[in-house]
Length: 122
Image (tube, rainbow, N blue to C red):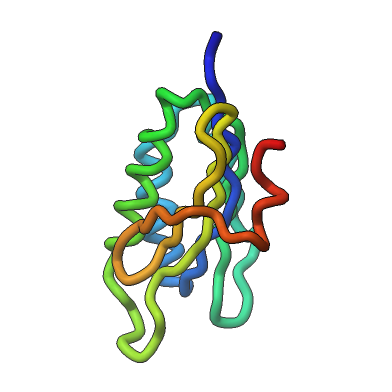
């Protein structure tokens, strides 16, 4: 029986970075899990948000994780800004839940905080 991981979260970026993020995602379209991405219809103001939500078979998690690593490494458009940031919660039916924190040019896996534990398996 397949093990699934529920992954949900968001990426914060500026408009220039949004274009690059769309490019990373479009070159990884798989016809199935890629349907979990959500983009703003019409970006406004200075921060754009890109969302993902879906249940992925455990063996396919690297498909999404590798995209997030590539996105995290995108260059900063505004040297005074924080760069690309985000937070994802990955909840495995077997292994429990972890946070994927997108910051400082990478994806950092950390144990889920108590305040988000309600999102994990019971």
